Every structure is written in C-alpha cells, then in structure tokens.
Image (cartoon, rainbow, N blue to C red; front, side, top):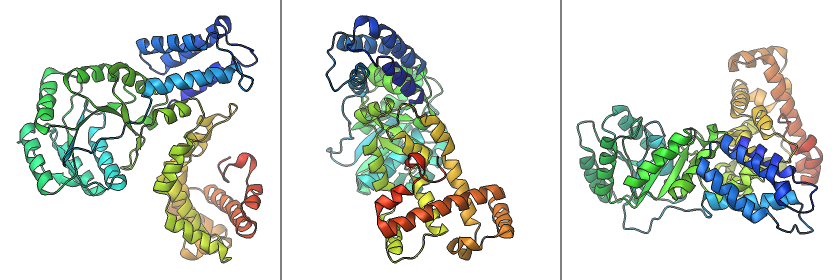
Length: 453
C-alpha cells in the first residue's frame, strides 16, 4: 500500500536537497510533484487542494535548522500533515458499555464485510480476550450466512443462526437475546450489501442499526475502489452515525488514496486495515505509523508487535537451546523459520515496515521475497524424509530429483534451497560459538537474509 506515493514523495523531497532555505520559488516545483503524486494515488481533489495549501503555508519561509536540510524539513512538514489527515491518533474500539457491545458492519457488496467480521472477531478473541458472537442479516445471499457460520467456527467465535426467510430486524432481536444468554462480550452484526447505494438498502441498514442499539458502526470500504468508495462513505455517513472505517484489501492497493480521502471527507477515524486473506490479517490503524510508512521511514513498532504476536516463543526457545547444546541447525528448523515468516505475511510484509534507504526500490525487494516463494521452499522440505531433513548432506542427485517431483518444482529450486540452508547453517554455527557479532559478519551484503538479496 502507498508504494507509488512513497516513491514520488521521496523524489519530491530530494529535489530540495542542497537549498539553504525553503522559499516560494524553490518549493513551487516540489509542491507540484506532491500534488501529482496525491492525484495519481487516487486522493480526492478537494483533499489534495487543502493538503497542498496547508503544506505551503507551513513550509514557505521556515528557517532550516543546522541539523536539517530543506529536504528533511519538508519531509517533517509532510509527515505532520499526513498524520493530521489520517486522524492524529489511533482510535481503539470502546468496550465500556454494558455487554454485549454491539458492532454493526455496513458497506457495499464485495467490500469484504463478512471476512472483516471474522477477522475482527479473531482479533478481539486473541488480543482483547473477549467472548464474541457473529450474526449475518444478509437474507439475500444464503452463501453469506453460510460463509459467516464457517468463519465463526474457524476463529472460535459463537454464531447466531439466520436464514433467508427471516426479517433482518428479527434476526437482530434474536441475536441480542442469544448474546445475552451466552454471556457474549461483543456481538458483531454483518449487514447486507448492494452493488450500489439504493434507498431500500439504506432503509434496511438504518432499521438494523436502530434495532441493535449499536455501540460501534463501522463502514467497510474496499481500498481499491477509488473515488467510488469516498462517494459511498459520504452517503452512509449521512444515514448512519458511523464511528469508524475499516479499509479492506490494503495489501493489494499500491495507491492508498482512499485512506487519505475517506478520513478527511467524512471525518471518521480509520480503525483497522485488512492486509491479506487470512483470518488474522487485520491490523490496527495508527496514523503516525502509517505516515512514516508512506514516507519510507518504516513502521518498526508494528513490526515488533507482529513478531510478538506471530512468532512462536516456544519454537524459538527450543532452537536456541538446541544450538547452545551444540546440535546442528537442520532443515526442519529452517522449515519452522519459513512458516513463521509466512505467518507474518512473508518477507514482503516485513520489508514494508522497515525503513528503506532512498536508493533502494522496496517493490523490487518484495517481488524477490514474496510469500509464494516461502510456500515453495516449505513444499520442498515437506517432500524430504525425516532423515534427509536431519542430514542434508545425504541428499544426492537422485534424491534431489525425487524431492523436486514430490514438491512439483525443479531440481534447481531444490539446489537453491540447499544453498540457502548452508548459508543459514553457517550463521547459526557462528552465533552459537561467538554470539551476534560473528553472525552479522556472516551475513551477505546489506544484511539481508540468505536467498533474499
């Protein structure tokens, strides 16, 4: 997300390098580049205009301190404005009401409401330790009701059954009663959507909202929908007391303009980002962290949180003890590392949160280190016998052919994995004997993991 905008803003800031002071003349071209970058990112025109005006007012005539170049001062101004436009601070859900706290999800069909309901339930169960119930009021699509029931079982949430014969308001009534009887802390209501906004749809969702007495009303918006998403958000905001926005499919959108536009146009905070298909692929939205990510400064805090949540401490401690005892790093250990990296969204997701030097192309790094590559590597290891994983040196030519056939890949792919393993094994050996300094000396150029250069 924001890949194009990040590179364009970085180019604009570099254009000010070497100047002793930011003036009207030397910032004119830079602001033009910023305006074009925002428009290309699908940011709404009124939002672009107000953003540029505020940046110009702050930037022109500002003295540049000794420790800052004009480019850095400009980036600082842009960062502050991005934080402001994205909402200043993180806005968590409010659970202070009498249980069950009711969360209504509204939006157009295809925006991802049903999957977001499941993702939000999993997040509340895992992080907030809440007892969550899910219910669907989409009586027009039997598949939506069945999908939510399946997802509820997958994430460990309670489910209130509904059918196409029911009226949406009656479903809500029954769900509230079931939630109280089941001692649920949170009731998440998935509403029906349409391909476009119409009067019947709005009347129905307003009735569902009124019946539920919702504590939180979240507008679910497809981040790849562009200006249409902003228009839909405006209509929903007129009819419902929206308390926040959830942006879905953020991992598939390189532009990101919807995030900047929706927050500014309707004035409601962005609460979460959907960043993948998995049920745990829902991130809390932090304006300051996102602004840093847009400007290529990285988001190390979110990366640390990801590691704490998704990396198995038990497996990490087990590997550390194994290395300390002098037992070698084997392919089963490598498989554990690859699977944990995949759980974090792959190397691409990690790179997105790391600060990138100006001469590095993040998109190129992500393309060479995607999740598909991780899955292929795990498939190769799965095609090996336990003995081959423990003693990789026994893997000769005929075994490589068998492993390649079993994983549906080529012998070259097996060779590439074994070479990567050899490099990692050397690093682990150095780490166990001489600590982190020796391990860092064994890293390839630039400090990237083996096979990811």
